[in-house]
Image 1 (cartoon, rainbow over the protein chains, first blue to last red):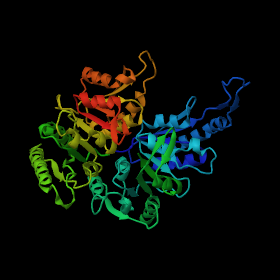
Image 2: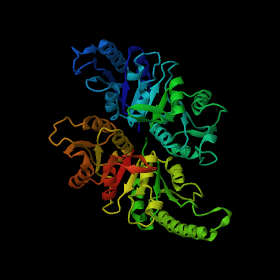
Image 3: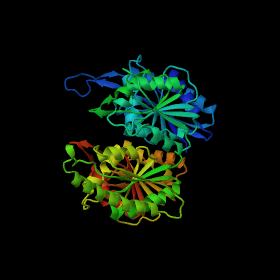
Length: 281
Length: 277
């Protein structure tokens, strides 16, 4: 089984090209259906409906920017699809009465895999329009997060899976199976196992390896620790040492009163990764 | 995913083991999966230091071992002639909570199969963990009802679709089953009785179709408070042989609690039901 329907959340022309390269690189012979989703934010009204205010002040600069870029991004999407054996479906959606993230989430819940960009910290609007971690937490689908920097090689040849025996890591590992089929080497790593309250076996990741092997995935189980290093840092170090082109890990976090709080390793990897990361919650 | 390759069936109550095994065996056979039979004993909570009460603990342990042995024999005998790959695991958690031991085993499986849960069973609270399995397992779970027909349960699944995270999880986690089904109904329960909104079932139906699933979108009406009832009614009316739905719940006051519809279904189900959280 493969991912047949892939949704790519596009925000700007530069990163759209990177995302499309990763998306098209995931095709495994079969004709993939790729949805390019472009969500245009609504205008922000200040003072609307308040008694005593004259006319509401309308902030629609960003909305207009998004509207102006729509044509260029659509062209990038269609060019990318035309050159490849895939069916492209362009969706430009107006987030009229809701937030952009809510719109993307609605579309994301009906697809096999979501592809989105890493948060660009230098972008002033990143908080509202870059939200791959929220997609991973709330969509119920695996999200492949593409870093904004670093070379883009075909994803999924050499893969590191982060495993700590918890719910989220189980989710991520099994959600990644369609990608792992094509991998030439997979390493399951329990980072900083000594810090965990319980350790299952001598090689805690062995059970997962056995289950993956039944799917035909070639894998080995190890533990890794770094004195004074966080689990996130150890994972990235292991991925680098293994020559990994993708990291698979659980997305730890929860939402409280519409605020999202993320686990330490999740945040660290999201901030600093140079290879694509597949996350699930 | 290339189907379910590792299925863990959690067995606890001798009286209901046959039904649970019937479903697990049919599925393992259909999917050509490795079937793990799992029995988790109780932790030695009663064993104080210095060996006080040692005989009581030993007696309790012996009783449970006896029960496990009877269940093991049923497990070994199940599906004879089908050349299944089976593996029996008997776990004594020692002083650790039984749930921790259980989780270690289920999280490395593609699918969990377990009995519905029986509130009238003496050991229900100690040995059945539907809430934890569903909300903390991280894997889809197929609950086997204590009553109702089980034969050919995978022929006509009904998916309860709501465009929420959990429903999405369940629909995709059920794919290996759905692909083998004759026909799959994707049902949306519109909470607005007079509503003529566009049903949100189109996208998910098309995505499932690309996997080779033969699905039909359907709509019914029902207020949010009655979703559980409406679902069971639809299952009956449409002749569905199994149900696929999001499992809702959260952690409150140091225990896991199901959402309303999930609880209603788990108490009143009559067809095998696949849930994901």
